[in-house]
Length: 540
Image 1 (cartoon, rainbow, N blue to C red):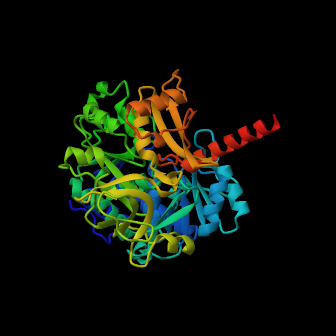
Image 2 (image 1 turned 180 degrees about the vertical axis):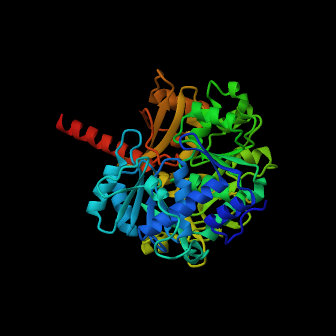
Image 3 (image 1 turned 30 degrees about the vertical axis):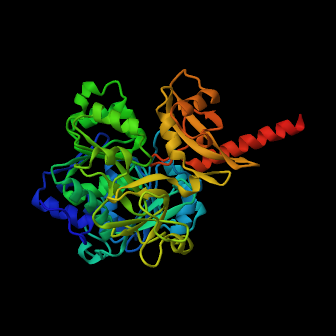
């Protein structure tokens, strides 16, 4: 079985595989059961006609906010079949974020769970429908009863096969360059942005990995990353159909349950954030699960991987090639290490760009810097999105006329084209006019035996502009003070200006759904605490 063609719609790919190999398993969902390609094709056709009965069709934006459930895949393919646009958002978003997305996109429908982990999504959806006039329908998954004007997914699936409007799916089929999805992310800056995808962009995003690692229909992808976000949507949901393989879904991350599913379902590939890898590598039950002998590849992205974690992964997961992954919602997973990458590349870089992509590192004026020098990373190629939906201002700022996309990441490139991300441009600490990258400091802190995780940000200083503040998560029951942190920096031969000058111990970091630390929130937190402290000193 060959991979999908560049202009083959995801729904067409489903119907094609269903005809040739109807009994092939497409989805393993512990919540909704096992679904073959043939059954999925039947469900997609039924749902597509149900959506048309709601007058959802070409160009209409439908927001899908679901956990990692089989209906997410069925919905995306049915929406594609009728020419509608799937807007993916994280399950953690609530009315504040959703209101912004609905107003920006003029979304016609919102799909939510009826309820999920104690939260009434259907009720939230109805409040949104009453407050935002463009939102015509709220579709809820997991409840048959219609409530407050909403309609259930299950009811749509039971409607007649025939399209009441008289149009066949073939007549409704969109073009490959029509918008098929929007990937929303607040990222690490707090700005809500929707990246625009068409079929060819999403195909290119997966072909980079397929060509590098040789994926085929025999692969079973572990869908643990949220499929409402870029990594899960692209490199799990879409990848599965592109190769004609199978996907094993995990509703929400639980490392013990993940180990069970990975072993029992013989999964071969997963792409996930650094905390996911950490949870597996250091899990007490890993050896009981045969060190996950079926998993041949783990692509780890979302945040810098501490070298110690990567080395520990080689020992703990001897059957798995664990590679760094760098990418963004705006351009997919761009860099990884090939199987034959030298050890120094694997441990000291974030990989080599996929075949369809170009990268360069530039200074503030846009001129390329020498190899090995820091600058802003720029990306160009088939995987780059078309811009931000409804935001021409942000599109013009980040997507240049010659095709280059300004990533906002600080990086260097070596003589062989491998890149190393050294932080976000906005995350740089400027101490007395000197730029300090937090990443190196965080890696040193991570190697401390009592520190589970670390994030370093700049805190305001009246004389130097900024000083470094280390937020750390400690092992249970442990303590740590600034003197001990600075002693560790000294013993690690770190230049003194880079030493953290304040330590804040927290239970957890504010994170994006894809596993990135929201450093802007940490900066806000420390600035607020310092302001309170200053006010207290003034009043006393």
